Image (cartoon, rainbow, N blue to C red; front, side, top):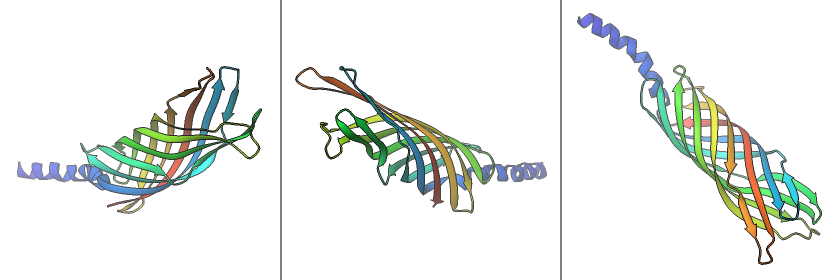
Length: 206
């Protein structure tokens, strides 16, 4: 009987070690290829859209907790280190530039172990950004600057290249709340914003 218990215990150790390999605090530095979409409409048939792709650097910090031999639950925060330039529109008012600034996110990340060095994960998070639609020199445009929030979803793959170092890749989509604006003369305009990004991250687990 003791022999059987010993065999069972030894058989379980490699499986349980999978979660232990991933559990703990981690930090990462990533680069994302971001496809933004900022859309302006008004009540006089005005329509403009900024959708130029841009590269954005990002810092990330999180903690993963094993809840079974195969699953972990992680929480984390991330923040962009530079702005996302969504491009310039040559509107009737002149050239107008759209910029996404001060982006950060707080997220929940369930992770499924594949083996002792790799895993797949999903991610859901709260995101916040500042949108600037600014007229360039010579434009007859009243600048719009506002903050908005949204929910982001992502999926990805994570692999340890050593006991402490890991790399991961993910696809992320964020839908931000619309922003409705008006003035005293009854002129109404609105903004819609969305981002799709592919993100590569190199990280360290403590």
